[in-house]
Amino acid sequence: MQKRKLGNSGLEVSALGLGCMSMSSGYGPAADKGEMIRLIRTAHDRGVTHFDTAEAYGPFANEELVGEALQPIRDKVVIATKFGFEIDLETGKRGAGTNSRPEHIKRVADASLKRLRTGHIDLFYQHRVDPDVPIDDVAGALKELIAQGKVKHFGLSEAGMQTIRRAHAVQPITAVQSEYSCSGVVPKSISCRPWRSWASGSCCLAHSAQASLRARLTRTLSSIQATSGT
Amino acid sequence: MALVDLVRAVAGRKGATPAQVALAWLLARKPWIVPIPGTTKLHRLEENLGAVNVALTENDLKQIDEASSRLKLEGARLPEAALNMTGR
Image 1 (spheres, rainbow over the protein chains, first blue to last red):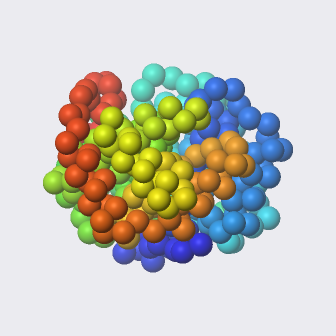
Image 2 (image 1 turned 120 degrees about the vertical axis):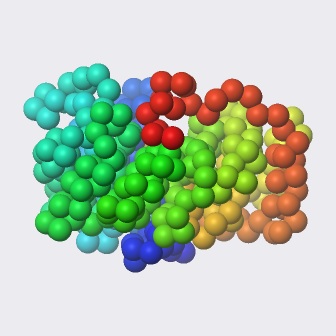
């Protein structure tokens, strides 16, 4: 499959990635694990080289699934995962809201590395902006993790423009994952990775002038998907 | 809905599905957009990956953009609580 570069980072991925969330959580009951491992490996056989998961999916179960599925082909793929919710690191119990305190991010990184059965996370996203932690501090924590080699690239998810700019000034951002909401112009060195491009009617927006057009289209496309019985 | 009909028509012309047109449209927007559709079904995976072979022409894209620009967008893209977490 054709490759695309994320930002200026040199990180190259297949034009289409695979979002793994629904395999363990999200919509409906969790799927059969063996079957999902086969699905992930089939995707790679067909040329998919990047796989998206998060600590919060499960919590933990989705990273464990992705880690097991990709272990034999780890050096051939890009793994993206996310931190930033209040989740008990021992029990996986979800607390209220977000937690992007730097010390928490570092502990989450170590736990994710274990579940993913790898020595590094290719792309580590803040899952949601934490209103209680300055984004500069979050970016600073990522800078340290990158210096340690535990993380290769920093990403943001569902972040507004001010947040993106401030974070980028501390630690360059490789990708922004979003529905269709980057309400402004994303710095040119950042890539956008739309999730749920049609399943729930969303996509990524990079330019404000295009925002309403894309929002309209993707919202409409979601209704196509809904009517086609998926 | 005009846009839905149009996307179906484009899909029909290309021998593709509407979902494939949706993904192909995203891919055509910018060279740095990388969609990450999720699925738990092999046939959906195959369908999604087929989108990379759907080549939309300038005219296809123009038609889709024009149809989408005629739609009225209603509601916020996220619930207010979630919007508040974007940092704007």
